[in-house]
Amino acid sequence: MPRIVRCGLIQARNVFGPEAGLAKVKKAMIDKHVKLIAQAAKKGAKILCLQEIFYGPYFCAEQETRWYQFTESVPDGPTVKLMQKLAKKHKMVLIVPIYEVEQSGVYYNTAAVIDADGKFLGKYRKNHIPHTKPGFWEKFYFKPGNLGYPVFETAYAKVGVYICYDRHFPEGARALGLAGAEIVFNPSATVAGLSEYLWKLEQPAHAVANGYFIGAINRVGHEAPWHIGEFYGQSYFCDPRGQILVEASRDRDAVVVADLNLDMIDEVRSTWQFYRDRRPETYGPLVAP
Image 1 (cartoon, rainbow, N blue to C red):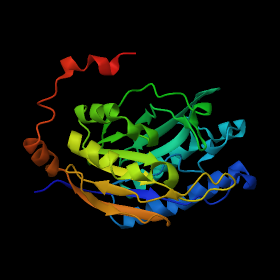
Image 2 (image 1 turned 135 degrees about the vertical axis):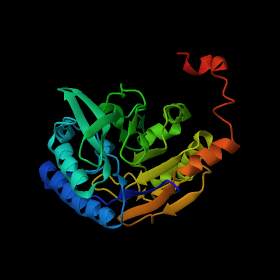
Image 3 (image 1 turned 90 degrees about the horizontal axis):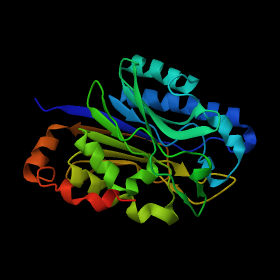
Image 4 (image 1 turned 120 degrees about the vertical axis):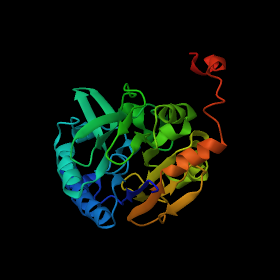
């Protein structure tokens, strides 16, 4: 029998701007996602990934210390605890990107991975941190990740996570494949004028180079008061041949679901022997300072 796993992605428009108060902003987005997660469960999704720092706007468009209030401990914070209950209720693996505090003044852009029985499996911390115009001031908020490129053995598949700007770096994408990832999820917040021409190039290329599936997520809408550009959605799954299987619109909330035939990984890797033909002994300059 084919090994088929139904997976899902959520892209969503932010509900309130910061003028509403950070507590209200956060609660509104969590409430919204609880409903969207239930929709994904009704569609039969067994693994579901949310967008980057899902419970608010992309606040890195400004540099303000008030957003440090958005941080939570992982896994002991209230959002992860809630998501553990939902994962168990829906028998669904959840990848939950939040703003993590390790200790006062030490913050990470993190994704918690929760198994279908509600067990916390671990976390990925975004490794590559941008600080670029227009309005992607992430070094103000996040330390670079220090947990490497873990792969999580969930109830349904071996899952890796790569967050937003990470996707521009093929090294970590390869590390995830070498560690056994079958599906890599990339929750993002990216705007049309900056990156749209790369959106359907880089990640299908990673899928081909490494012989795994990718779920790419981007939020939607223009976020006040910053208006740094249009978050253009178009969340999608692609297969190990780089073919896009399903794609959301650019301007609406969506629960994107696709059936991923994991047997295709062996089939593709039997044709393209990229792992066999690697020459790691020649790659020293890639990791030179």
